[in-house]
Length: 221
Image (cartoon, rainbow, N blue to C red; front, side):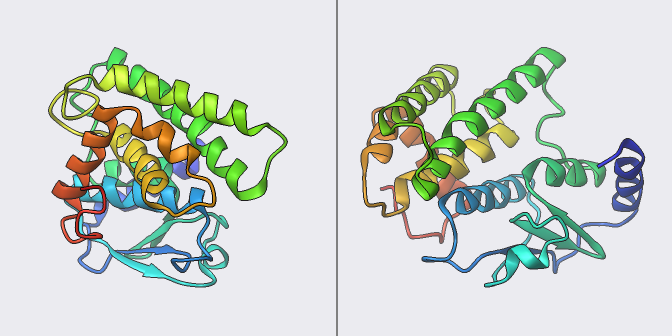
């Protein structure tokens, strides 16, 4: 999206309050939704929950074809349609809701670096499991372990990655880790890597209980 287009969307978004009938679209649950798309959808849901913005989740067989960008998940808010976490974060920010405004510039840069790490390593692992990419299983699992180690060290004993308040990084990490931990796969090596880090497990449980109280009734308990 060009800078002019972004500015135009931001201007439109800022003039309208968040509606009660905002809708998030994703593929049908079960066999149709891909691991990576499920993680992406959950990340957006977590982000909106953290912003205290209501959204109804609708599963459609043709969700990706309904999206103007061909990407899922996407949200329908008023007369606006926005897909993927990054653009949705900017769209929501234009409406006056931001999880990262309290961070200084150094922290914001650090947050973006960790988000890139998650997208480069965890997303790659999910895509490998979907499409059997050329990378070997061992290399993929090693990348996942390195990513989890870095996230675990950054989180430490804090409730969230940047102290006491969640940011879009927390939403993104939760989306990917929770999906990996709760999706039944033919091989459990991926989830076992995540389970090696107790503070990441506690982090996922904390967000599940706080923001998804009725989701799966404690699938990580």
